[in-house]
Image (cartoon, rainbow, N blue to C red; front, side, top):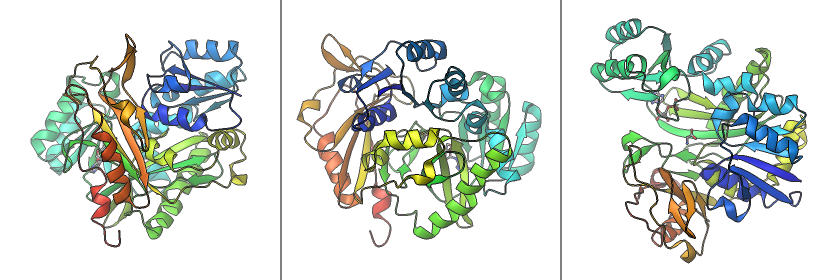
Length: 423
Ligand code: AMP
Ligand code: GLY
């Protein structure tokens, strides 16, 4: 088979790495890919959002399976375009991906199908949003309705912060059209967990649990990032919580989407807050998480390509998906200044000294035969262990060998898991 992977971050490196292990696969292309991906795939000079360019390539090269990593092409309708041309592609179509593309739509569907989530109100006018905030006070969470690369969510601890968030999103248009509407949510307290699941629109098979670390600094301080590290499993996700999530979140959302005329096929990602009143959905994403995909896919023992084919063909119920019992941890190494402005082109050293686990590349490229930084999140150093503690130690042993100018990372990835009794 010839496979095309769309995207060029750490998640896509994990996808390419896992797809390369399938005996069914002869050749992998990745658009645009990165320096790490280039070891397993031919990287193409086509951007992940150039749907016409991707379609032309896949059509001319007779690609057997296209796998889409990021949300932007899914929300823009890449799946519909490929399917209209008879090409097999893994991911939800435009109508289904709107579950991530519009936070307001996601809230309406959750409300309609009784899926536990934070109370909310949505606004198209800044003035009305501000009045609502003055009436309800803080803390609250202000969210741009559309896609904003993970930056459109502002957790406001004071009323003033919340009012400023509305001004930033709706008046300053910091996220462009994504901020034409805002959703204002009740602030939820608890521990977060990410549940990814495969679904063909009828059957839902959850993957192993994981936990992201969204803030830039240790102790969950500082601004939100795309994710500074992740581990799997998340011990906070007990069998009891799992049962509730499968029954009250995963099953109803897939049935609800089908009932709405938006049948969902691909990976669905539920970002959950485990509150005292039970698990509540913070968001749905229409794809693998990044960096959650790295530790989760490292634990997948089954053939990912076979699962993806079963999803596309509506045969997921036949699949028996196997996972390793080992824990896994991914520590993200980021550029100095991220998630704000940062410099690129810093030479990365020490990658050849890594002798355990795997280093997934995110923002890297080749320059004059050297691997240099080319993004905010640069590498995802990932390792497994018999316990989470062992996996943490293994990952950080490798982190110590790698360096580039300005490199920053959190030293507490996975620590929350160790604080839980019985671990
Ligand atoms: P989202 O992209 O909607 O998941 O939001 C990004 C991050 O903001 C989440 O991972 C949470 O840390 C935080 N967040 C979002 N919604 C809420 C909420 N209702 N209460 C507390 N924190 C939230
Ligand atoms: N790690 C969070 C996300 O992929 O949205």
